[in-house]
Length: 166
Image (cartoon, rainbow, N blue to C red; front, top):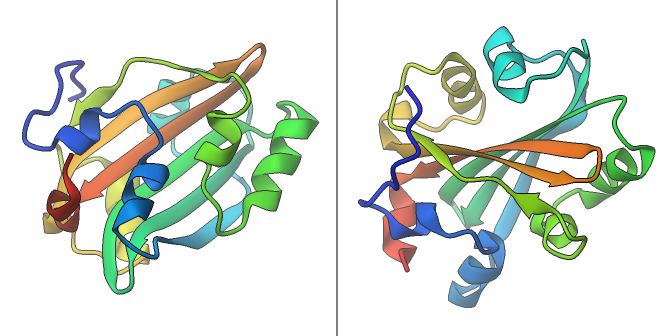
């Protein structure tokens, strides 16, 4: 279901740099906050995260331009994680997660990709934000770590992302 092989149809999905920084050069990039709170996550997400916690801090956003969604992003960290990290995540609102991760010495793991449209958590999220699942090109997952802090990031690249490919 998940592969470490780069997704060659969309170079943007292989970039380890800040996607919001890159996309901002094309105009007024919007980060639409869908949700940002403590919640339970699916067993599938918990298995990938590897944590034993029951509650996680989850932030869902859509990144794109006016009426043109490009990326759905879901960040997950254990709610008992660093109070500083949770505080920073709560304060982000409509700002980029990269503003924390790329400025605070977080280390990013290798990407894993999936083209499967059957991944339950993504199916539910796309319905919630009114994005057709057929417009999903690829899902990628990665971890950001800094000492004991760990964030799991899922990014769903949508069809519109092709227009801004590197």
